[in-house]
Length: 233
Figure (cartoon, rainbow, N blue to C red):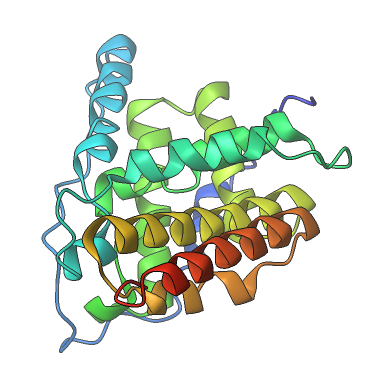
């Protein structure tokens, strides 16, 4: 695998944030309460530990869609990213850089440690959500990781996923959809619920041939379960 090394031009911070500042959230939109952004202490070790601590929130924050549907004990953001990483390792596509896909999977929702899992139903525009997440990533890299090579690599991976231009980024986006569909069917089975809307927003959008096969197999399994037990999804 080619290790990502980022050289940040002087205007990098402005160019990153400018991509996400075209529109502001409507004043009538529901508002989350966001934790304050971190300010560097000047102590590299202390600031790095602050980063290690903030990502613990990914383990404790629950995915918003499941919370809104009142799923008992819903998965955390970290749960979601972990299974995506394992799914990436299961791919047999030799044209993909699988090691990079694993890294993309564990980085793609990293900003949610600061802003949470913002759902479409919350009233935030896409551009506002993107701006908030870009600001969070910039804070991690600037204030906690001191623009180190490690920090820049993490940010470059996050940006690659957000832009969705590389085969690996598009593949990992499919894993994001596939993992959600898997979780939806598991909650349907466990709690006798109909979570069709999560299937509709994921399975039909799959693009990668192998992931589409996984999705087809999942839908066959779901249909068989429904046939065996008509009261379930």
